[in-house]
Amino acid sequence: MIWIAAVNALTLPAQAQNLFEQLVMPGLLVEGHAKLEKECGNCHEPFSRKSQTRLCLDCHKETAKDRQTGKRFHGRQPDAAKQQCTHCHTDHKGRDADIVQLDRETLNHAFTNFELRDAHKPVPCAGCHASTIKFRETPGRCFDCHKAKDPHKGRLGENCDTCHDEAGWRRVKAFDHTTTRFPLQGAHRAVACSGCHVGERYKGVGTQCADCHRIQDVHTGRYGAKCESCHDENKWSTVHFNHDKATKYPLRGAHARVKCDACHTGDLYHDKLATNCVSCHRKDDRHKGNLGSRCEQCHVETSWRRITSFDHDVTRFPLIGRHAVAPCEGCHRSMLFKGTPLTCNACHRDSHHEGRLGPNCALCHNPNSWTRWRFDHDTMTRYPLTGAHRNLTCEACHVAKNVVKIALPTDCIACHRKDDAHHGSFGPACERCHSTASFKPTGRRP
Image (cartoon, rainbow, N blue to C red; front, side, top):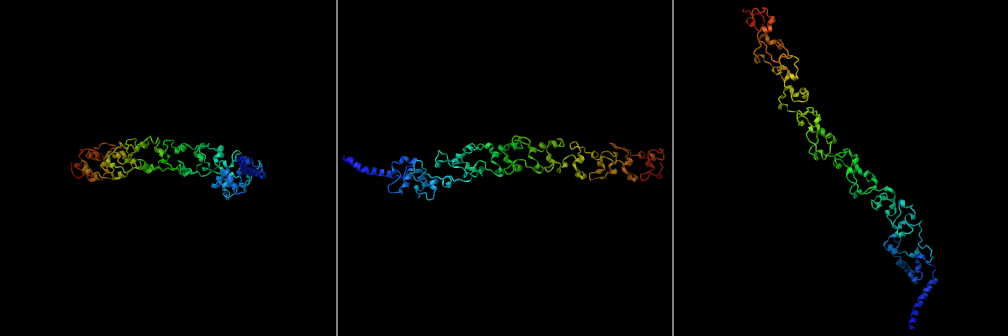
């Protein structure tokens, strides 16, 4: 009995205090706090208002953490660490009372972890905040809200803000393509994303030129896929391949202006081209192969029609005198060269002597000048010219045309039969009475 009396002595004051507090309670708590209503000490300490905020935060630990870290709505408020909870939230307003007191029209969203900017400003609260999710638990990533509208179907990941911003979903900001395996340079900078990423395909896109430009390949694949060997990203039509350094065949003269396809008609990597002239110019060979394949002996790369100083002295017909300045086609009419005749009359038609003196023009003429002749009848024949014979023209005696071998008689009567006043009475030995100085009689008797 003594023990019971002692317990009653201790508990009666506490029950009396609790009963007192319930009697003076200004109203029912909200539905969320209803379970705390029977014990006022959960939220209040007798005669200590300052302790109430501490007691609130003991239950609302997430809010307490926000105030300590300066995050979210309760942590971003001015003087958030000093602010009393009762400044905004009061209870005992009844079960259906709104103690949150959130004015959606005037709420400054900048105090939250997600400031509303640009296109997000006119969006109603329900557009982001589902009724079944607390405001603080509403996700803040683009992908969380816009997943259903993602045209990339998640292939580019969930960091939408890498390319897009809040000004407009269709507006794409300057994505830093250097973070990929294909930095954009030159003309690639101005290409729209869809120009390479057809059908919103980003992963597995090829990085070789031919992967995108195969349809534009004027070489139809003959030069392989290493387009960068000749082209760069600034301008597709500009070719920078250095044939002199990159190959064993430097391009000089007219070759430097020739298009690649003029020589490389097949597969660049399988069809190895020969470097001798005739391999490309066989159809242009006017000599029909008669002069062999060393075209460079006569021709140069500056122009096919330009002939170098071919050493004609190594042939059977050295060029001297006027022959040295004569064009090749002056003698080589057929351009076959081989079998060209070496005699003078083969090129120089004898229109003056008409063949009376035979085909060996060199007996009288030389290559220095056709009009100058040097035949010495006294030393080069068995019939020296004396007297009036010296003034005669060659044709006066050599009257037969187109003869091959000249063998004129040397007796006087052979030429002077018509002049014989004796009509042959004194025989053919005219020199017994006459001399070459004059046909008139000399006074001698036969």
